[in-house]
Amino acid sequence: MAKDAGQDEAAKKAKRNAKAAKPPARPYERPRGGEARAISDLVPEIGRTAFRKFGFIQSSVVSRWREIVGDRLADVTQPAMIRFPAGQKAGGTLHLTISGAHAPMLQHVAPDLIAAVNRFFGYAAIASVRMTHGQVSPAPAVQQPAMLKPIPAELGDSLRDIGDPELRTVLERMAAGLGAAPRPPRIS
Image 1 (cartoon, rainbow, N blue to C red):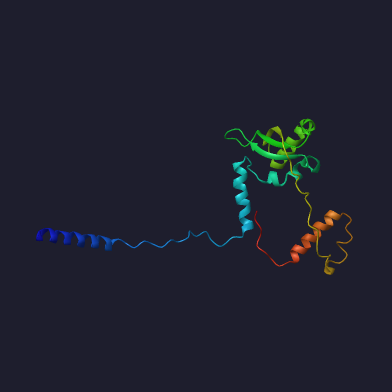
Image 2 (cartoon, rainbow, N blue to C red):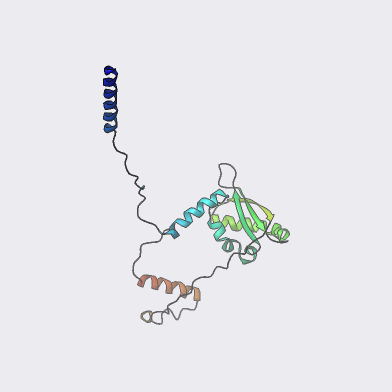
């Protein structure tokens, strides 16, 4: 019996030594990803993931649809997805949702739609259009922000004499940007 008790004590000591030799568990540390980022910077990445899941490689096709096809067609159509052949990024099919009885008219302007989307991509990304009827929520009209400040006096009458309003606005914005405090470039 005494022999068994001695063996038990030796086994207990060995267990205690094994536990003592084990390093303590490290506390959890958050993986470092750099500085904190604004949520507005993260939204395009989140949206890009969702758009890819539903067949859009470039989310800008959805967000700039009114610019691509014009106001008249943007009111009655909405891009649903783009499907490309396996392993390719050209010759895809653009799936559109169309409201009401606009499908016959859009059948006639489908080549123009394809040309407009391909012009936007810069290459022959779309080869055909597939249309389905559905509810289309019209996208809000794109409005350019107006200049809030009048033309600075130090620019004199040189910009006021320019007849083309678009050129004058571009030059005013460029002058205001050059006069403003330097900011880091915005990369989108």
